[in-house]
Amino acid sequence: MRTMTDRAAQTTLISAPLNSCWDVVLGFEKYPDWAKDVKEANVLTHDSEGRGLRVEYRASALGRSTRYTLEYDYSEQPSRLSWHLVEGDIMRALNGAYSFVEVDGGTQVFYELELELVVPLPGFVKRRAEARILIEAVKELKARAES
Image (cartoon, rainbow, N blue to C red; front, side):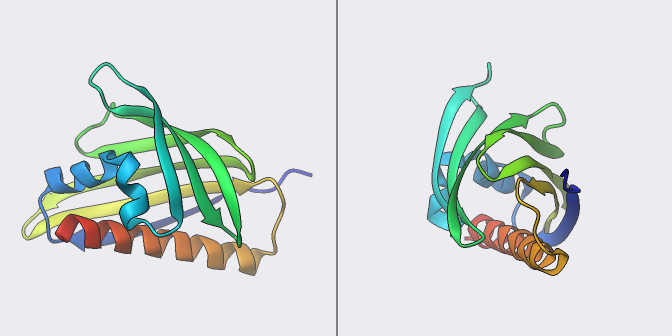
């Protein structure tokens, strides 16, 4: 049985310049310091400019520990950083992006996520988990970039 991919998005204004937001999102190995669900982040490969290309994560999700590897796309930098799932133990798809727009007073950040789990979950459970992931990710990024 194939489950549907769910998409969700969240936006916030961060009172920090765009380059500060970029520094936070590109500091993959520091994610465990500020993103509470991320327990480990290891850059496996770098691109020609030294940025993390493939990053392996260990995180808590849905009450358990999960491992997954994401590959990042910098082709739209500095306005967007996107990623897709290379491999994961409980997900078939985990694609997303941070989009950044410099505005008066800081940076508007738009976070989008597309998730497909291996095991189907009831809709309300999935929606609650997605909302938590999105809200927490944006809140934690904002706190880190503004600190």
